[in-house]
Structures are given as C-alpha cells and as structure tokens.
Length: 388
Image (cartoon, rainbow, N blue to C red; front, side, top):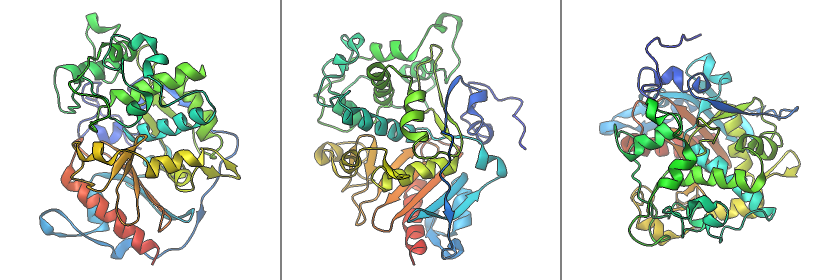
C-alpha cells in the first residue's frame, strides 16, 4: 500500500509526484460527500476476447508503441474494456486503484448532465428556460440572460478563462472557492455559489460559440439541487448508483459550505465508471429498467449545434463533432461518444462495435493534446481488436 507523500498539501495535490497518490485519495485532502450504492451490485460477466498485447500505435515522433508503452507514457492508472456488456480487459497500475475511488475530473460533468436528463424527464426542469428562473441569485451575473440548455452545451458567454496552469487571477479564485486550493484568512468564507454569482458577462451573444468553461457545470449542479431539494450526492445515489448496481460507494468533493464540485469532483472506482459508460451505451437501460430517459441519451449522442462547435476552440480535434449536454460527439464513422477529464480521464463509447472503454490516469500535465490524439487512436484500435 502506498504511503501518503509527506510533502503533499492542498497546493500541490494535482502535481507530480503527489498526484499519483492523491487522485485516488481525494477525500483525505478535500471535504467530500458520499454517493451511496444500493444493496445489490450488478456484476460484470468476464468474457474471453482477443489478446490486446498485439495492438500497436503510432506514438510520439512516429515511434511504434505497444499498448504497455502507451499506458506508461500516458501515466495510466486503469484501463477497462467492455464488449456487449461483458468485461473483456481489466488492468490496473497497482492493486489500490482497483478498489479506491479515483477522481474523474470533468467526466463529472457528463455524469451530472445525466441527472439533468432525469429531472427534465420528470418535469422538474425545462432546458429552454432562463437559468435565472431557477437561481434568482444570478440576476446580476453573466448568466442572467442564458438558458439552461446553453449552460448544458457550453455556449454561454461569461468573463472567465479556463487556465489550469494559472497561479493567480480568476481561475485561482475559482479553485479556492471550490476548496481545491488553499485560502488565506480573508478568504475563509469564499464559496462556490458566491463565486458563480460574481462572474461577469462576456462579449458576444450566448449560443454562438462553444467555449469550455467549468463553472457552467458547477452551476448545473446548483440548479439540480435547487429544483430537487436533494444534494447532488443524494441525487446521484438515488438515480444512478443504486439503480445501475454500483459496486462501491463513490463521492464528490464539496466546498466549505457543502456545495458540490459537479464540474470535476466526482470520484469512483474504475468498474463503476465502466458500469456508467455501459448504461449510456445501452441508452439508459440496465437491470431491467429505464434508468436514464432514452430520448436524453439520443439527444446527447445526436443533438447539439455543429456551427457553434466549429466556431469553438476544440473543433480541430473533432472537426465533424459536436458537444451536447456535457458529452463530446466525435463525428467519426462509428459516431463514438466521449466523456473527458483533465489529467487523461476518459469514457469512450462506440455504439457500432458495442465497446465501452474507461481510462483513468495520473498524467502530470492537465492537458496533453499530443497524447490525446494517441489515446483516440488506442481506443479505436482496441475497439477493433476486441470485436475481431
């Protein structure tokens, strides 16, 4: 068992070498709320599949990489592959990763958005309504004239820059408000809701351009809690973890007043993240029941504004893709869907090959676009190898 690094603290937990331990011990660093599983776990059936040892990739500088080298180069912690609902590959960098919830960063956004689909289906939310109808405290903020759907689709114009390497300014204020960063004596009352209300309006119209801004997803969590009367942890437990048959409790980080970090704070064991991915691949159906509305999954996989995406900052990665309800659409020949988190956390769902892949990692840098291309290549080749 790994020992907690002696020099680890709230300022350096996301940095190497501390992050390899920290990413699956987050609740020992940041306040959290438990997401309880139900009394019954839905187990995976193991199945034989073609060995993945022969999978080869074109790595950095056109070098030929084996699967093992790819896992090492991308600081992978876990790789799980399911085909037609059966577990065909399971790998962990060490035994602790298998049983300790691992932070999934912005994959949390995609999980949270599935809860929005459940509440919309039940008539508690209307995505066309202004978000201020649900959170009147936002009346003076940059969100004052944005719709809930625009928040879901990341097409809101707010005065905020997503800069993971910032050492001062608005982004550090944001992390301080979420309890992810140390605060001074005069910052002890900083909290996520007050921060969201402080964000100003950006230039231009909402709905025109896709721009990745994590506070949008924290705002979604606030809306879900407000309309349901339940905490985000309770909602996730009741509508996802229990009905899908999660194997282990998950948890989500919270700020100093208990507000959930729905943009990036969910921590789960790898097999339960695979269960969630399989739930989405099966259009919300599992264990004999419709857990997530099928029409919502269809909207996540097929909806969205292609022109807003093309005007955005990530269109070069998926030129034929879109973004809808916190899910990425690749637009490739198999119409694969993705949930992606910084430091290389992934859910890959291929509806044609019926393959779902989960990759969890402790990548040192938040973003590595050069490795992202190789990750996508790996997922495609694994998917092809598994299906023969």
